[in-house]
Amino acid sequence: MTPELKGFIVLTVVKMLVVFTITLVGVALLTLLERKVSAWMQNRRGPNRVGYAGLLQPAADGLKNIIKEETLPDEANKILFMLAPLLSFVPALMLAAVIPFAAPLPVAFDFSLPVLGRFVHDGLVPMVVADLPVGFLFVLAISSLGVYGIALAGWSSNSKYSLLGGLRASAQMVSYEVPLGLSIIPVILLSGNVSFGAIITEQQTGLWYVLPLFFAFFLFFVSGFAETNRLPFDMPEAESELIAGYHTEYSAMKFSMFFIAEYANIVTVAAMTAALFFGGWDIPFTRWDQTPGLPQTLASGLFMFGKTMSFVFVVMWVRWTLPRFRYDQLMSLGWKFMLPLGLVYVMLIGSAVWLIENMLGVGSPVTRGFLLFGLNLGLGYLIFFIIDRGHVVRGSTARPEAVH
Amino acid sequence: MPRDYSAIIILGLFVIANGILMIGASHLLSATRRTATKIAPYESGMPVLGSARERFSVKFYLVAMLFIVFDIEAVFMIPWAAGFRQLEGMRGLLLIEMLVFVGILAIGYIYVWKRGALEWD
Image (cartoon, rainbow over all chains, first blue to last red; front, side, top):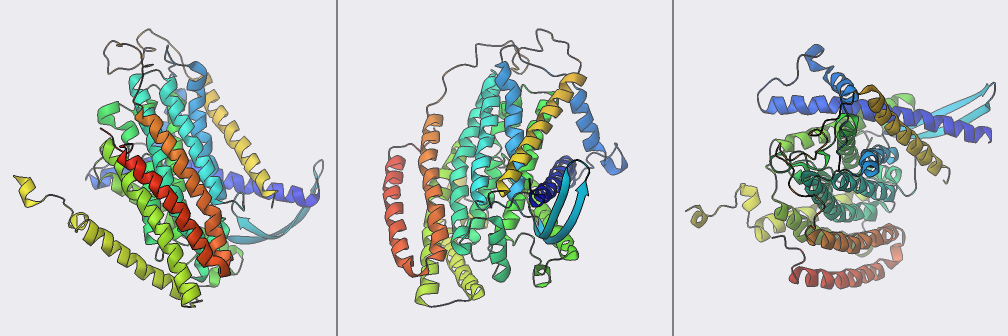
C-alpha cells in the first residue's frame, strides 16, 4: 500500500468512527427526546428520574435491554429470527455514510508508525464517510434492504401479529419507495448530478431546492414518514391492532436493534431532506463557508446538525398532530395520488427547465429558481383549490349534507 | 474515485461487527429461563389458536409486482435527469423521449387502476 492510500484509510476510519458514534449517541438521545417532546405536547413531565432531568434514561434503557432475558419462540425459524434484527440494523446505519455533514476540511499530515509505515495526506477532505459518485443511487439501494429485515422478522417469528405487521410494513415500504425515487428526479434534473456533494454545491450557487422544487420536497418528506414507519403511517406496529407489529416476539437487544434502526432511519431521512432541499451544510446568506478552513467546517457542521434536528422535531410533532391512516387510505395515497403527482411533476419541471433555459435564455440559477417557485405556487393552487376544492386547506372534508 | 467504495466496505464490516457484538453481549449477559408459556407465540395472553403459516391476501404479491415496474421506471429516469442538465442542445428531443416513455407507462398505470389492482377492500 502506498503512503497516500494508508493516509486515506486513516481519514476514512476517523470519519467513520465520528459518524457512527454520533449516530448511535444521537439515536439514544432521540429516544429521550421523543419521550420529552411527547410529554411536552401532552402537558406532562416525561422521564425525569434517572440523572438530571432524565438525561441518563437512554443509558439505563440500553443497559436494561442488554441484561434482559432473550426469548426465542418455540415455533420460530431460529436462524432467520436471529438474522432479522441485523438485517434491519446494518442498512440503517450504513445510509449515513453518503450524506455530507460539513464543509470540506483541508488536512495535511505526514507521519510514520513503527510497523505500519508512512502515512501521507495533503489536500481537502470532504466531510462525508464515502464520497460516492453514485450518491443517491446508493441510498435507494441500501434503504430497500431494510425491508428484508422487517419482512423476515415478521415471517420468522411465526406469530400472527408479527406476520401481519411484517406484511403491512413490507407492502407499505415498497409502495412509498416509488414516490421517494420519483421525488428525487427533479433534484437531479436541476443539479445534473446524483452525488450529494454536487447537489449541495449547486444549491449554494442558486436557491435552496425547497423553493423551486417544493412538491418534490413534499413528496420526499411524506414518503420518508412512510419509509421509517412513523405516524401517521405506523400501520406496521399499530399498537391498538397488532400489539407491536413485526417485533412482537422480540426481546432484549434484538428488540433494541429494531428501535435503533428505526431512529437511525429517521435521522437519515431528516439529514437527507436537509441535504437535498435545504442546502445541506450551507450557511444561508453568506459565502464565507465556501472557503475551506477549520472554523467553516465546524460552523457548517453545526448548521447541518440544526437543520437535521429541526426535521427530526417535525417528525415527532406530526406524531402528536395527525391520527393514523387506515390501510386502504395509506395505499391509495401512495399509489393514486403521490405516484401520478411525482410523474407529472418530473415532466413539468423538465418542460419548465427547457422553456426557461432554452427558449427564454435565462442563465442565472436564482432567476430560474424563482420562476420555478412560481410554477410550484400555480401547481399548489391547482391541487388544493381546484382539484381538492379547498377541503384540505379548510381542515375538513365534512360537507353540510354529510353531517346529518 | 473507485477507492471511495473501499470506505463503504470498511463501514459495512464495522457495522456488521458492531451488530454481532451487541447481540452477542446481550446473549452472554442475559439469564435464560425457558418456560412453556414464555416460548409460545404471543396472542394477547390467550391459548394459541392454529398456526401463523397460513395463506395471506394476494394483494401483497400484487403490490410487490407493481413496485418492481414503477421502481425500475424511476431508476430509468435518473440517468435521463442527469443527462438533461448536461446535454443542453438536445433538451427538446430528451423531453419528447421521456414523454413517450411516461405515456406508455401511463397506459399501463391506467389499465392497472381500472382492473382494480390498486383497490384495498
